[in-house]
Amino acid sequence: MEFDAFTGGIEPGGLRSKDEIRILVCYLLASVSAPLSREDILSIMQENGFANYFEVTDSLAELAENGNLACTGEEAFYTATEQGKMVARQLDKALPSSVRKKAVAAALNLLARAKRERENRVEIEAIPTGYTVTCHVSGGEVELMRFSLYAPDQSQAELIKRSFHESPELVYQVMLLLMTGQSGQIPAIIKQSQK
Image 1 (cartoon, one colour):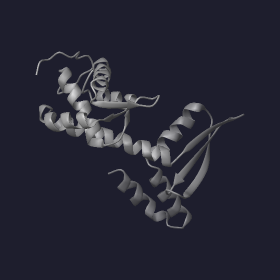
Image 2 (tube, rainbow, N blue to C red; image 1 turned 135 degrees about the vertical axis):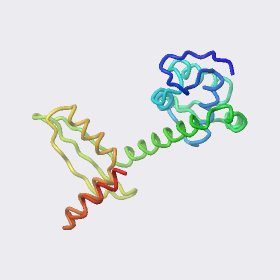
Image 3 (cartoon, rainbow, N blue to C red; image 1 turned 60 degrees about the horizontal axis):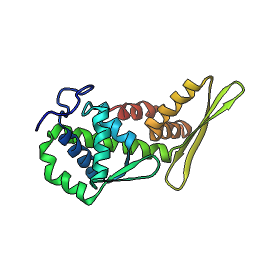
Image 4 (cartoon, rainbow, N blue to C red; image 1 turned 30 degrees about the vertical axis):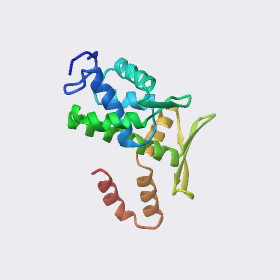
């Protein structure tokens, strides 16, 4: 393929062809079978050094205009159309296997994080002396646990929120072990979560 894409911000092994970028976008959306926002797609492509911001933006617009992607909502959520899925199936071998695998893994991680954040809410409330951060652990239809922490400033409140969203299930397991008198098992649970 002809190298015709801007390469600023592209890591070695990244995509240097506009066609490869368009194929990867179709492949990514066809593989995860879930809508991704414009920001999500840009994040996946840039954080992994696959393609330049401007090239991805142009590719999204072109793919939507050509009927390979459907774009819905104010936040511009994209899905692969049947035509886009066909492009992905027929041309996926034009992309390096490592790029395909890494892109899909990044998208699945992003979707899992979004699901965790949706199901396990965090509310930050300003109070006169700082902030109250209330974390909710969900078991689907049932709220399993809710707790509040004090944070002296906004940055610490946001840090608590991000840390909680990293692993709400670990927070729940540790608290449950602590409250049921099984605190000796906590180090093993923490060690297991770090694998």
